Image (tube, rainbow, N blue to C red; front, side, top):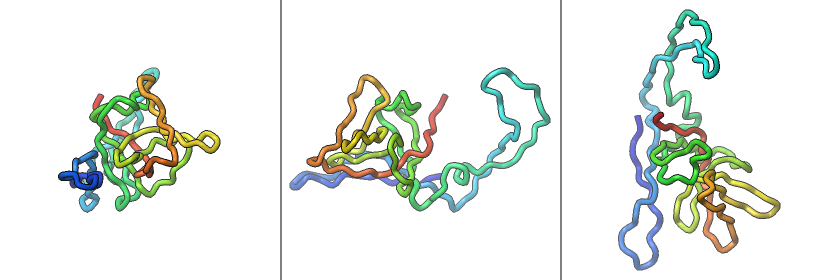
Length: 159
């Protein structure tokens, strides 16, 4: 379960109400939700002989959320990260306390707007790179108001 929290950018001076930019959900780890987990992995290559099925319980919060106080669920809007398996409507699990490193997928905030991209450091330059050739990398320059909001740890989408 999760509780919903809207994240808004600060309003420009003299502007009207804040415009929500990102749907952010906090995980509710107060309740355990255990689902069935088969211990025998399913083959993604050639079929394997059927083993005896041993069933255990799996709590998705326990599996996906290592730091509940700094972990959020964020809904994706757009196509710039399809090459990384992130699609419009997907749910990202984002850890705001995870270390940022070159080539990690992050949620960045540029001049008050959120974006999901792969962070790249090339020499002294910093880029946010899409995973779709229809989009161009964003070079982070000194005149931009830029922060890294969090590191994407998992993506959840329908198949």
